[in-house]
Amino acid sequence: MDRATADAIARIARSKGRRIVCADGEYRTWLSPGGAEIWLHYPRRAGDASAGRPLEPIDDLKGMTVFQRGASAIRMRVHRRLSWKPENALDGVCIASLPALRRKGRAMPFVFEQLGYAVEPMPTPFEARVQVAGLAHRVWAYATEAEFLRAIPSQRLVARGSIAAMEPDEVADARLIYRTKPGALWLVTGVIQKSIQLRNPLADAPYYWLLVETDRGQIDIVTNPDVIEGDISVGHTIQTVVSMAGRIIERVDGA
Figure 1 (cartoon, rainbow, N blue to C red):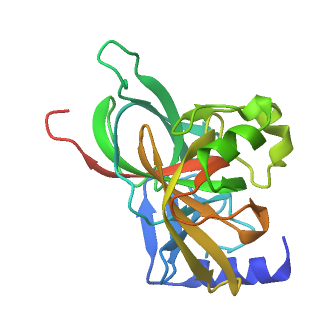
Figure 2 (figure 1 turned 30 degrees about the vertical axis):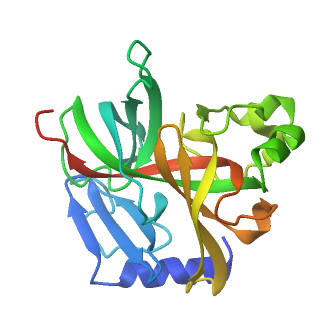
Protein backbone atom coordinates (compact mmCIF):
# COMPACT_ATOMS: atom_id res chain seq x y z
CA MET A 1 0.00 0.00 0.00
CA ASP A 2 1.48 3.36 -1.02
CA ARG A 3 1.56 6.35 1.31
CA ALA A 4 -1.13 8.30 -0.57
CA THR A 5 -3.56 5.36 -0.33
CA ALA A 6 -2.78 4.85 3.36
CA ASP A 7 -3.33 8.55 4.08
CA ALA A 8 -6.66 8.51 2.21
CA ILE A 9 -7.82 5.46 4.17
CA ALA A 10 -6.81 7.11 7.44
CA ARG A 11 -8.80 10.25 6.59
CA ILE A 12 -11.90 8.21 5.78
CA ALA A 13 -11.53 6.04 8.88
CA ARG A 14 -11.17 9.03 11.21
CA SER A 15 -14.20 10.84 9.86
CA LYS A 16 -17.01 10.89 12.42
CA GLY A 17 -19.71 11.76 9.91
CA ARG A 18 -20.01 8.47 8.02
CA ARG A 19 -19.75 5.59 10.48
CA ILE A 20 -22.15 2.67 10.17
CA VAL A 21 -22.04 0.45 13.25
CA CYS A 22 -23.54 -3.05 13.13
CA ALA A 23 -23.40 -6.25 15.17
CA ASP A 24 -20.20 -7.52 13.51
CA GLY A 25 -18.20 -4.29 13.52
CA GLU A 26 -18.43 -1.06 11.63
CA TYR A 27 -18.04 0.48 8.21
CA ARG A 28 -16.33 3.82 7.63
CA THR A 29 -17.57 5.29 4.36
CA TRP A 30 -16.68 8.03 1.90
CA LEU A 31 -18.76 9.57 -0.90
CA SER A 32 -17.39 11.83 -3.61
CA PRO A 33 -19.39 14.63 -5.30
CA GLY A 34 -19.42 12.45 -8.44
CA GLY A 35 -21.01 9.47 -6.65
CA ALA A 36 -17.94 7.28 -6.02
CA GLU A 37 -18.12 5.39 -2.72
CA ILE A 38 -15.56 3.60 -0.57
CA TRP A 39 -16.66 1.40 2.32
CA LEU A 40 -13.87 0.40 4.71
CA HIS A 41 -14.46 -2.81 6.70
CA TYR A 42 -13.56 -2.92 10.40
CA PRO A 43 -15.00 -6.18 11.79
CA ARG A 44 -15.12 -6.52 15.57
CA ARG A 45 -16.71 -8.92 18.00
CA ALA A 46 -17.21 -8.63 21.74
CA GLY A 47 -14.39 -11.04 22.60
CA ASP A 48 -11.83 -9.69 20.12
CA ALA A 49 -8.60 -8.19 21.35
CA SER A 50 -9.45 -5.03 19.38
CA ALA A 51 -12.75 -4.49 21.23
CA GLY A 52 -12.71 -1.51 23.54
CA ARG A 53 -9.63 0.22 22.11
CA PRO A 54 -9.55 2.97 19.48
CA LEU A 55 -9.70 1.78 15.91
CA GLU A 56 -6.41 1.73 13.98
CA PRO A 57 -7.18 2.88 10.40
CA ILE A 58 -4.65 0.61 8.70
CA ASP A 59 -3.92 -2.22 11.15
CA ASP A 60 -7.61 -3.00 11.79
CA LEU A 61 -8.71 -2.70 8.18
CA LYS A 62 -9.83 -6.11 6.85
CA GLY A 63 -11.33 -5.15 3.50
CA MET A 64 -13.07 -2.51 1.44
CA THR A 65 -15.79 -2.19 -1.16
CA VAL A 66 -15.56 0.31 -4.03
CA PHE A 67 -18.82 1.40 -5.62
CA GLN A 68 -20.37 4.05 -7.87
CA ARG A 69 -23.82 5.51 -7.54
CA GLY A 70 -25.62 5.36 -10.85
CA ALA A 71 -28.83 4.73 -12.76
CA SER A 72 -29.24 0.94 -12.91
CA ALA A 73 -32.09 -0.79 -11.10
CA ILE A 74 -32.32 -4.44 -12.05
CA ARG A 75 -35.01 -6.68 -10.65
CA MET A 76 -33.80 -10.07 -9.44
CA ARG A 77 -34.42 -12.78 -6.86
CA VAL A 78 -31.85 -13.04 -4.10
CA HIS A 79 -31.56 -16.66 -2.97
CA ARG A 80 -28.68 -16.56 -0.48
CA ARG A 81 -26.36 -14.07 1.18
CA LEU A 82 -22.93 -15.36 2.18
CA SER A 83 -20.09 -13.91 4.21
CA TRP A 84 -17.18 -15.54 2.43
CA LYS A 85 -14.18 -14.57 4.60
CA PRO A 86 -14.08 -15.94 8.17
CA GLU A 87 -12.01 -12.98 9.38
CA ASN A 88 -14.39 -10.39 7.93
CA ALA A 89 -18.11 -10.76 8.57
CA LEU A 90 -18.72 -7.37 6.92
CA ASP A 91 -17.73 -8.70 3.49
CA GLY A 92 -20.34 -10.73 1.65
CA VAL A 93 -21.92 -11.68 -1.64
CA CYS A 94 -25.45 -12.24 -2.87
CA ILE A 95 -26.31 -15.31 -4.92
CA ALA A 96 -29.24 -14.24 -7.03
CA SER A 97 -31.00 -14.99 -10.32
CA LEU A 98 -32.12 -12.73 -13.15
CA PRO A 99 -35.50 -13.43 -14.79
CA ALA A 100 -35.57 -15.55 -17.95
CA LEU A 101 -35.53 -13.58 -21.19
CA ARG A 102 -38.20 -15.79 -22.74
CA ARG A 103 -41.38 -17.26 -21.33
CA LYS A 104 -40.04 -20.83 -21.22
CA GLY A 105 -36.44 -19.84 -20.66
CA ARG A 106 -34.36 -20.30 -17.54
CA ALA A 107 -33.46 -17.75 -14.92
CA MET A 108 -29.80 -16.73 -15.00
CA PRO A 109 -27.61 -17.16 -11.88
CA PHE A 110 -26.05 -13.85 -10.85
CA VAL A 111 -23.48 -13.23 -8.09
CA PHE A 112 -22.37 -9.84 -6.81
CA GLU A 113 -20.61 -8.31 -3.83
CA GLN A 114 -23.21 -6.60 -1.65
CA LEU A 115 -22.50 -3.06 -0.51
CA GLY A 116 -23.09 -2.83 3.25
CA TYR A 117 -23.60 -6.58 3.53
CA ALA A 118 -23.80 -6.64 7.35
CA VAL A 119 -25.77 -3.43 7.94
CA GLU A 120 -29.07 -5.22 8.47
CA PRO A 121 -30.34 -8.81 8.42
CA MET A 122 -32.10 -9.80 5.21
CA PRO A 123 -33.72 -13.23 5.41
CA THR A 124 -33.68 -14.96 2.05
CA PRO A 125 -35.10 -15.57 -0.48
CA PHE A 126 -36.60 -12.25 -1.58
CA GLU A 127 -37.27 -10.20 -4.72
CA ALA A 128 -35.43 -6.92 -5.02
CA ARG A 129 -34.36 -4.10 -7.23
CA VAL A 130 -30.60 -3.76 -7.21
CA GLN A 131 -28.26 -1.08 -8.48
CA VAL A 132 -25.34 -3.00 -9.98
CA ALA A 133 -21.99 -1.41 -10.73
CA GLY A 134 -19.07 -3.12 -12.44
CA LEU A 135 -15.52 -2.07 -11.61
CA ALA A 136 -13.75 -2.52 -14.95
CA HIS A 137 -10.49 -4.42 -15.30
CA ARG A 138 -10.43 -3.86 -19.06
CA VAL A 139 -12.70 -2.10 -21.59
CA TRP A 140 -12.89 -2.58 -25.36
CA ALA A 141 -15.12 -0.21 -27.35
CA TYR A 142 -16.21 -0.31 -31.00
CA ALA A 143 -18.06 2.20 -33.17
CA THR A 144 -20.34 -0.45 -34.70
CA GLU A 145 -21.52 -3.97 -33.98
CA ALA A 146 -19.85 -5.14 -37.20
CA GLU A 147 -16.51 -3.75 -36.00
CA PHE A 148 -17.02 -5.51 -32.69
CA LEU A 149 -17.69 -8.87 -34.39
CA ARG A 150 -14.59 -8.53 -36.58
CA ALA A 151 -12.22 -7.54 -33.80
CA ILE A 152 -13.27 -9.60 -30.79
CA PRO A 153 -11.20 -12.74 -30.07
CA SER A 154 -13.00 -16.08 -30.14
CA GLN A 155 -12.80 -16.64 -26.36
CA ARG A 156 -14.82 -13.44 -25.83
CA LEU A 157 -17.16 -13.74 -28.82
CA VAL A 158 -20.66 -13.39 -27.39
CA ALA A 159 -23.81 -11.67 -28.56
CA ARG A 160 -24.09 -7.95 -28.00
CA GLY A 161 -26.28 -7.37 -24.96
CA SER A 162 -25.17 -10.48 -23.08
CA ILE A 163 -23.57 -10.81 -19.68
CA ALA A 164 -21.65 -13.93 -18.72
CA ALA A 165 -19.95 -15.21 -15.57
CA MET A 166 -16.21 -15.64 -16.00
CA GLU A 167 -13.31 -17.31 -14.25
CA PRO A 168 -9.99 -15.38 -14.24
CA ASP A 169 -8.27 -17.89 -16.56
CA GLU A 170 -11.05 -17.44 -19.15
CA VAL A 171 -10.19 -13.76 -19.56
CA ALA A 172 -6.42 -13.93 -19.15
CA ASP A 173 -5.99 -11.30 -21.87
CA ALA A 174 -7.83 -8.81 -19.65
CA ARG A 175 -4.94 -8.73 -17.14
CA LEU A 176 -7.12 -8.40 -14.05
CA ILE A 177 -6.10 -5.50 -11.84
CA TYR A 178 -8.47 -5.87 -8.87
CA ARG A 179 -9.17 -8.73 -6.52
CA THR A 180 -12.66 -10.03 -7.16
CA LYS A 181 -15.09 -11.94 -4.96
CA PRO A 182 -15.84 -15.59 -5.83
CA GLY A 183 -18.39 -15.70 -8.66
CA ALA A 184 -18.49 -11.90 -9.08
CA LEU A 185 -16.32 -11.64 -12.23
CA TRP A 186 -18.43 -10.87 -15.30
CA LEU A 187 -18.07 -10.23 -19.02
CA VAL A 188 -20.52 -7.48 -19.98
CA THR A 189 -21.27 -6.69 -23.64
CA GLY A 190 -23.71 -3.94 -24.58
CA VAL A 191 -24.33 -0.46 -25.94
CA ILE A 192 -23.22 2.70 -24.16
CA GLN A 193 -26.19 4.89 -23.17
CA LYS A 194 -24.27 7.47 -21.14
CA SER A 195 -20.55 8.27 -20.91
CA ILE A 196 -19.40 10.86 -18.36
CA GLN A 197 -15.91 11.74 -17.20
CA LEU A 198 -15.69 12.30 -13.44
CA ARG A 199 -12.84 13.05 -11.07
CA ASN A 200 -11.69 11.15 -8.00
CA PRO A 201 -10.75 13.83 -5.46
CA LEU A 202 -8.79 11.38 -3.31
CA ALA A 203 -6.41 10.48 -6.15
CA ASP A 204 -6.92 13.73 -8.11
CA ALA A 205 -7.40 11.58 -11.20
CA PRO A 206 -10.12 11.19 -13.85
CA TYR A 207 -12.33 8.15 -14.31
CA TYR A 208 -15.42 7.35 -16.40
CA TRP A 209 -18.93 6.35 -15.46
CA LEU A 210 -20.74 4.49 -18.24
CA LEU A 211 -24.34 3.36 -18.37
CA VAL A 212 -24.48 0.25 -20.55
CA GLU A 213 -27.64 -1.31 -22.00
CA THR A 214 -27.72 -5.12 -21.95
CA ASP A 215 -30.40 -7.77 -22.48
CA ARG A 216 -30.75 -7.93 -18.70
CA GLY A 217 -31.14 -4.18 -18.20
CA GLN A 218 -28.85 -1.22 -17.69
CA ILE A 219 -25.58 -1.70 -15.78
CA ASP A 220 -23.34 1.00 -14.34
CA ILE A 221 -19.67 0.61 -15.29
CA VAL A 222 -16.77 2.46 -13.66
CA THR A 223 -13.44 2.54 -15.45
CA ASN A 224 -9.97 4.01 -15.23
CA PRO A 225 -8.98 5.68 -18.55
CA ASP A 226 -5.79 3.60 -18.64
CA VAL A 227 -7.71 0.33 -19.24
CA ILE A 228 -9.85 1.58 -22.13
CA GLU A 229 -9.19 0.55 -25.73
CA GLY A 230 -11.31 2.42 -28.28
CA ASP A 231 -13.87 5.21 -28.20
CA ILE A 232 -16.44 5.07 -25.38
CA SER A 233 -18.89 7.48 -26.99
CA VAL A 234 -22.64 7.07 -26.57
CA GLY A 235 -24.04 4.51 -29.02
CA HIS A 236 -20.84 2.52 -29.31
CA THR A 237 -20.61 -1.18 -28.49
CA ILE A 238 -18.61 -2.04 -25.40
CA GLN A 239 -17.24 -5.23 -23.93
CA THR A 240 -15.74 -5.15 -20.47
CA VAL A 241 -14.52 -7.52 -17.77
CA VAL A 242 -15.77 -6.29 -14.39
CA SER A 243 -15.91 -7.15 -10.72
CA MET A 244 -19.60 -6.75 -9.90
CA ALA A 245 -20.99 -5.07 -6.80
CA GLY A 246 -24.54 -4.14 -5.94
CA ARG A 247 -26.66 -2.07 -3.60
CA ILE A 248 -30.09 -3.43 -2.75
CA ILE A 249 -32.34 -0.46 -3.46
CA GLU A 250 -35.49 -2.05 -2.17
CA ARG A 251 -37.21 -5.30 -1.54
CA VAL A 252 -40.14 -5.66 -3.91
CA ASP A 253 -43.62 -5.82 -2.36
CA GLY A 254 -45.06 -9.30 -2.35
CA ALA A 255 -41.65 -11.04 -2.18
